[in-house]
Length: 68
Image (cartoon, rainbow, N blue to C red; front, side):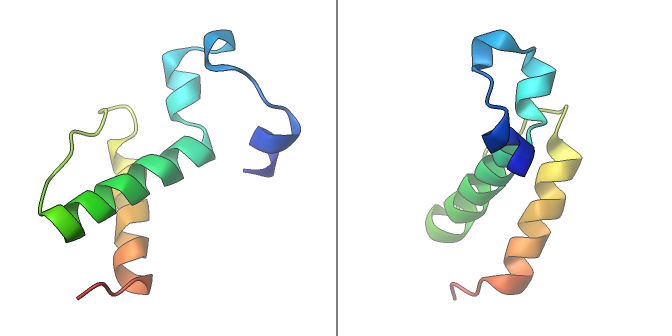
């Protein structure tokens, strides 16, 4: 993740796959998915290219964060 900050690229400088697979994007998408589910009972659509990574991160949030 530190690499994302040390060597920033703009989204127009990379492919969709590269952009979505950045650790910062995985974290952001997973966190928004987690909160939407917990607070609003809404399931978001996750891009298939990163679905496994996002759901793994969501599982980590479920272990650490207790909103109920």
